[in-house]
Image (cartoon, rainbow, N blue to C red; front, top):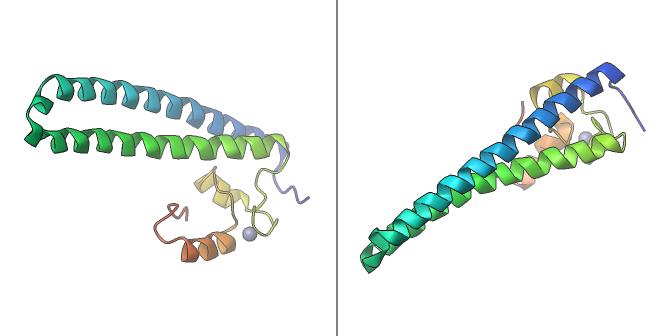
Length: 132
Ligand SMILES: [Zn+2]
């Protein structure tokens, strides 16, 4: 196993990821509360008119999309934290090589080295946001 990060760097990344995890949980909570109230507002008001139902559906869908994005990111943060616990943080999941500290600083949840990320993006167009 290639461990290229110092103990200090690992600890810093752990802090960054823990803070990200906390704020994502809060974002999801807020988005759910917001979705809930808008959902009920729509149900209570406009949805009585069937023509407005599609507008309400659209609003709910938008909120779900926002929550989905947070949930997706939270899932990635948790996955990365799990890998850290196994001593595999900073190790590319595809080639097993080091991801590199500079890349991790730019994107602490990176799971692949630059080369593997580029290859992955070519086969998953429109997926993860490029980190570098
Ligand atoms: Zn790689």
